[in-house]
Length: 324
Image (cartoon, rainbow, N blue to C red; front, side):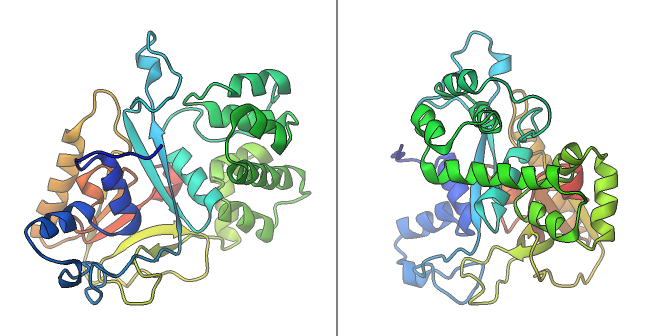
């Protein structure tokens, strides 16, 4: 579905946060007569806005639904707007960004689970025909129950590329389950495919805190990469980061004491702008008081995730593991 509307919708906010390219701000400047080659790119401060963004990462958006609050509503997903909020995640590959996005939703049952009985393959495939907010998890359970990529495509019409990625995630889960011991290489591979400590613990029968201790003992820690609009071709002036299980970190040393501000994640029913308003004003007040401000949030629709609101922005899920 291609959206066409003459307003700045949440899609333009998402595209801005995904690329580090502030669409509304640039559109406003174009409207008063500037041309793209006259507007500098805020992030590099060297390239003009006419310079096409180059991305060396993958971004996944996951909508947050609240059908449990509306028992009478039809939970079939169509082109009609039904989500109450959304989370966005950035990773070095699709499985990593996808699994980070699912855990960013902060909703019970949104992460993939690979333990317990999967259920009946045919029943799961029939259930997956109707698009719902839990459909992707139903598809994963069908894969666990023995469905083939062809069957998943036949029932759901989900593009084969994405089906293949789901099978890849399932393969890593199988490797984790079957390995005689949790080696550093296997652990690192699971982390590079977006598995949380909690998921790894479930599969291996360990508590999350034990998994974290083992991971730290093995020296497997995330590094933080920059969203710089130019795939590191130019230096980025704006510290806007995402985590990845990669080689080198791109975070500069801190010069003064800092305060971390935790955003409130995806919008929910009964929670509107006031949480984001307080996050942003906390950032401004702390900045005035001489602290470096560090924002952690995963909601692309908010002002707190604008790269110029805080001194540093970490676009991360608000789970215990990611915040620690």
